[in-house]
Image (cartoon, rainbow, N blue to C red; front, side, top):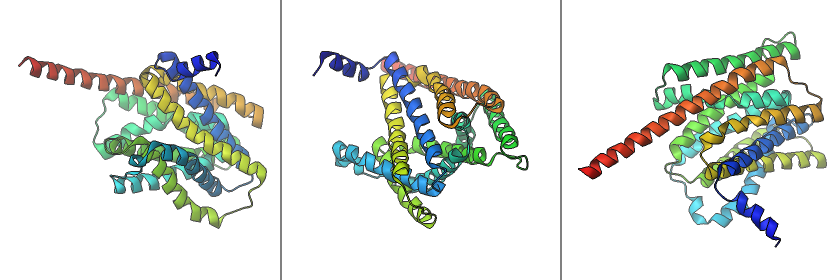
Length: 319
């Protein structure tokens, strides 16, 4: 093997800030590729059929990884938790695929940035986690950005519609994905990450099969290529995020994920002739800073808890 190739391989698998940035940018690229694939195939296949293929092919992609990892990753300790997240995840994926097939790439990406904004109020409702006024203000500003996109894009798409239907579905999908994140947070203590991912894909694929069968249409070779791109890129997004998290503190590289909006603008214009709308720019200018502020406050909160825990341990050691 070439020495240069070994050097690159070692660099990619090493820990470090620049490695984390690299993997976050890769995750942003694959996320954009996944949404672009939905747009490409969305004109010829129903959204529910696309949803099924995304989940089914994603399951197939994950199978070799699961076999390689060993039998321990098949364990399922919280069966009811898996069932709930599968149902919510199916709803989130179906809404997102339909919305993505009806909306411009920059708008899809911008609405996806709102997921962390919805986590806070949902965590308050379901987990009882309280937030101070700064977090509440950040959520309010970010939500205002989503409303700007939903309302003003609706005016551009159809003068008779008050809200853009595609963006509305993306909004519902973002809320459901936020709910799924909360459930994942609770389950990570008892479940392995790979098993969470595999059972999510397998369960949602099974649920989506019957609705997909009802609206089933012929799948051409070109459609199959786009569907395969969508499934593989969807799995690669998670892989890159995991690599980024392993390389460095996710807080230090979180801002770089917003480069996905740049990818969306370039790909949207190149493939679909889309020009970013003023409503998307205004919405992004509200959503992105709000999401960054929420991440900042949450990171400081975690560091404070860890610092207090270390202080208590030090006191006990002295005693």
